[in-house]
Image 1 (cartoon, helix red, strand yellow):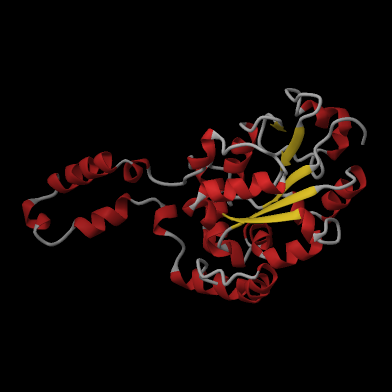
Image 2 (tube, helix red, strand yellow; image 1 turned 90 degrees about the vertical axis):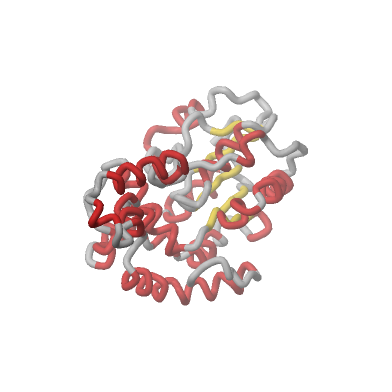
Length: 274
């Protein structure tokens, strides 16, 4: 592919703060991201051709650094091979998160948008669901496959847990990796894609809703400690979380891969339950 084309790729994974990074990078002078998060050019849209791809970055300056944040590339060997054929020295950014939490967050993201009507527990009886929500969390395997395309020296790994704790530090790591001299952009401290009950995100609204429900109950019922059941009822499925049996099984599924990942990254990953 000739002409100004992306050489930096955020290749994985969904629900690991990639939207945050996409927005932050779009605010850095000299960097251009696609108009929409995830072009899917090297996987879904490859047949549309390079002119279509370049048009996704139509606002870029001639010498701008173009960044493609499509977090499904790491799951697709064909996409990785296409990148290797098109770009001489690509840079890869991987964004990881506790794989158990990532899987459930991915599920809820789809369900909240009414794209699916499954229960999360069906992930172990339906391979389509397993491949969508569970397979992305085998991070060690994905990183090793990507090394066939891009050496470790041109790969940066970020953890969503680190971003939540110290976003400026992690953003500085990204800018250093890209060799860009710039200060952290305004959106560095912003949170994105928070899946939660609106009432619970707003404490005053939460207390008002809770009080109204309790007040409407008969006096004979209010004296029997009903606050906890009310709190649980007001939570949505995401806040209640997956059941303990499914969580334990999913933790076991990821254990071996996560152990290998600890060695690869040189981190104990104590933030994760796997």
